[in-house]
Image (cartoon, rainbow, N blue to C red; front, side):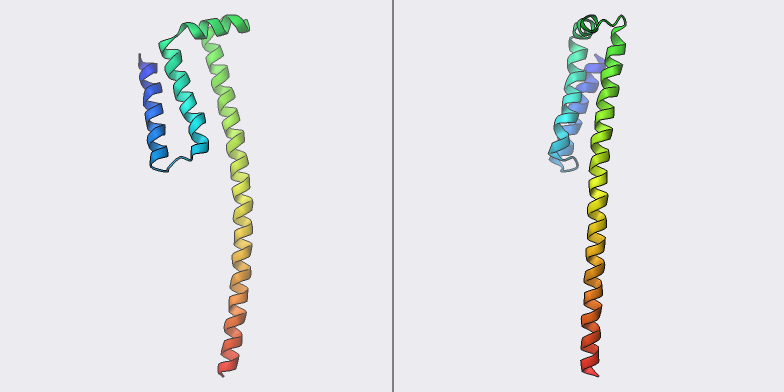
Length: 116
């Protein structure tokens, strides 16, 4: 029952994060899905045993750890791509701001020259 409570709490927490705009919708499905899986595995523990037998694994919790690690690896890769994209955009924006500042200083310099 503890795992079901954790899964349900995770789902509610994620839903509240989306409502408060602290979590984007594109991440919602991944995290809400993980909470739903935890909740379902807690309510229906036989699913894990059947999955372990189907995969030929003798210790069912190892299947859970395998898929949890796979999920985290996929999330890390996805977030690394997002960070790389944001770093590139940040660099481009910084260069654009530097050019705008340079142009602004040139305009200010020309106005000062005309005023004198």
